[in-house]
Length: 196
Image (cartoon, rainbow, N blue to C red; front, side):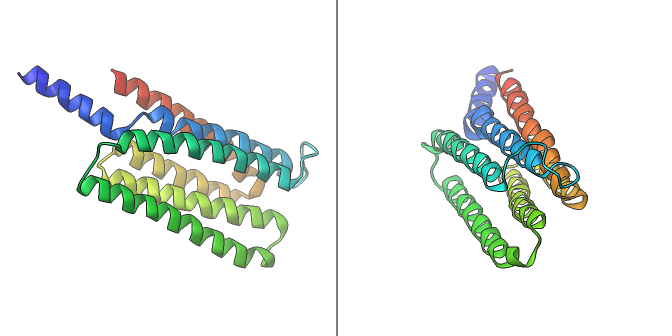
């Protein structure tokens, strides 16, 4: 009887946390591709490594994030289709917090961007957006007592802070490698751990 209870507890936890491959890997790939394009545009010293415009680099990032958002949305809908009550309400409020955070960052960046040099505008957009991502991952980890999610948010905050301090080119490189690669590694590691 205890074995059955343990198996059901494991199955429920797996179901409630969703498939990490759908929740983390798409964002890792999107950031790896998009921020690599931004790094190739900015370079380490402000000189591009490839003849790629900022708009082209941002286009790669936005297209990759659109695909990642679609894949993650599928994973979230699949994960929550049978959830009711307080958990469903928490999930809805959490989703609205993402929307509100990203809208607020967009408004702030639109307002302040004209006051900054071109490279600093990109840093404002990227750093502000990743700030929201970091905080909401940490908040999600706290809401659902999901330690990996909380630590992934902390990792995102640390990488973002270091990148902002180092400048636009290094921010793009660190985000591509440490966050893009980190999210891919975390998604695959969590999936493997979940199966075991």
